Image 1 (cartoon, rainbow, N blue to C red):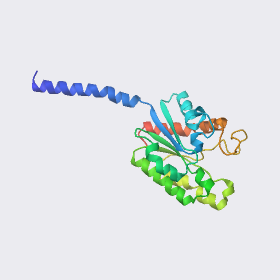
Image 2 (tube, rainbow, N blue to C red; image 1 turned 45 degrees about the vertical axis):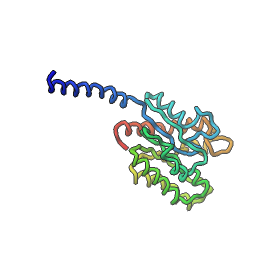
Image 3 (tube, rainbow, N blue to C red; image 1 turned 60 degrees about the horizontal axis):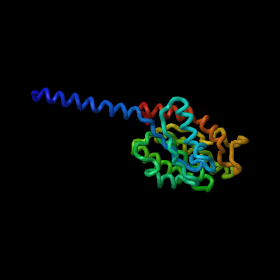
Image 4 (cartoon, one colour; image 1 turned 30 degrees about the vertical axis):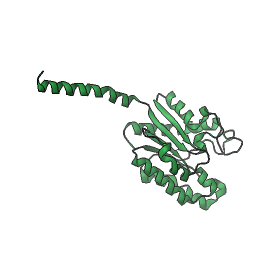
Length: 216
């Protein structure tokens, strides 16, 4: 076999070997991580009742090949999320649903500090090339109007700054709705989580479309 023929044979075989690898990479499930606090973790709920578990089931029910990993830690603040973002979101993650800030508000942490921490988390994930869906939160009424005016706009402002999609209120469909909370009146029960998943599903599906289309 001549040198040119050998070289051509080598090139053809190399391309053929790469095709299955590329196809496999494209066919793998989309890897999502829910980075949050007890609302994401599924406080006092069975593993299959958490937001990430119910979301994964709902997405698969609509034909999406996706894995949603639960990286929620009960009691976590935005500072806690920032301190663990690198190891809580492993390499190979395609997208993160970022839900933090509720505990900051409950503890009266400065909204400016909350925004600074969320900004740093978003920056870090962007540096790693990981898409983010930002889940917003509202300050509890007992914190007063001044606190709410400083806290509530954080999420919209950060979504615009980083060019990420925003789901405005993670607890939509649960807050003030009878029968949707645990006895503490704060955390969603399994039925409440189901309502949260139903409400947020269009936003998550759109987010998946952005990821698969190469958007961020």
